Amino acid sequence: MRVTAIASAVLVTVVLAGCSPDAAPGNEPSGSTPASPVASAASEAGVEVFTMPTACLDILPAKRLAEFESDGLVLLGGPDGLYGDDYLLDPSPEQRLGGVTCIWGPPDTELSSVTISVAPLPAADRPAVISDLSVSQGLNESVGETATYYWKLGDSDDHPAILNVIEDDSWISVIQTIGGTDNYAQAEKLAAEVRELVYTAS
Image 1 (spheres, rainbow, N blue to C red):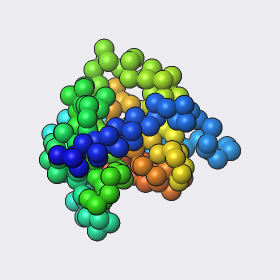
Image 2 (image 1 turned 90 degrees about the vertical axis):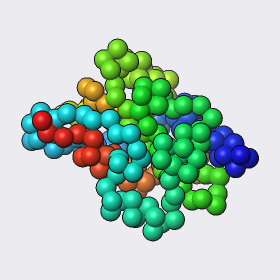
Image 3 (image 1 turned 120 degrees about the horizontal axis):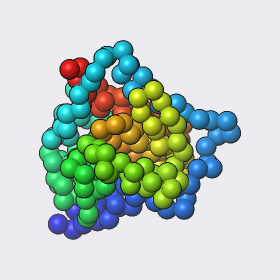
Image 4 (image 1 turned 180 degrees about the vertical axis):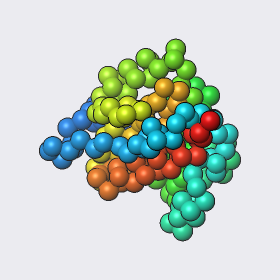
């Protein structure tokens, strides 16, 4: 379909936005070093087990999905999306690891609003993923208690807000097409909500 092809090209640009020279840190407010709370409760929950979801509707709570619907955001890409995994021209890095990439956006435009990916992260693949995020994409790095975060605030003009949460066995990423402090904070909330659903206490 023509719409799918056009949308795919746009989404590839968004998903790979962090790979461009513009993705390098430097547009964040002075002194700003966001410390993501995504895994802040992990140490209190005991041993947790990661379970790879197979459907986009399983990675966010019902309340968030209802908010997306209220905001006019439709699940465009992903295994249970309007265009399925064909929405992107090529698989995302997370999909190549056996994960899912889910794109919510307005159905009447060619630009996505929120891209959320979840993937298992085998030890053998971890160094390459981290090298891409920190070196190739030049994202900021923050080390938390149970995860390492690779992120960028972005701005409201050309740079998306990007958050990658790397744990021992998983990779959660959120890209907000329109960046900036508020949308980055929203990305943190989304990543935290995803984590609550894909990790369970053993």
